[in-house]
Image 1: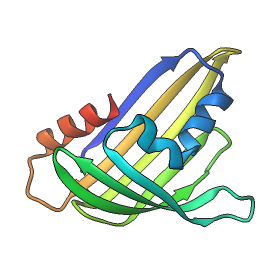
Image 2: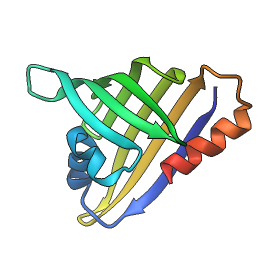
Image 3: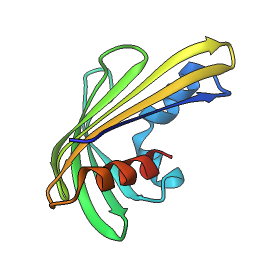
Image 4: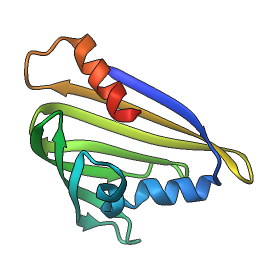
Length: 131
């Protein structure tokens, strides 16, 4: 089960980064692998609790249903509930403010694939996706 983690410093306030990460319906505008995203359910406060993502990764189309959790004010955690290509997909976005206009963004992504693909290849594909 490959785990890939990327941390980058972003020249933007933490709340702006979290707003972008939490705007799931806008993902297709900036992520070419995501062809569509729909909110299937929401928490009482209006934040998404379940998503449908239509994707195309390395020429392979797929549909994912993900649960969305907010374990802390500075984190968003998604967990695959159903989907093509993966038996497990967990993704955590975390932000740490460094100052008024600078933030560390860390993305941890852990997956298990349905096909017999070597872990090193899966790690490379995940790393390419995070980049």
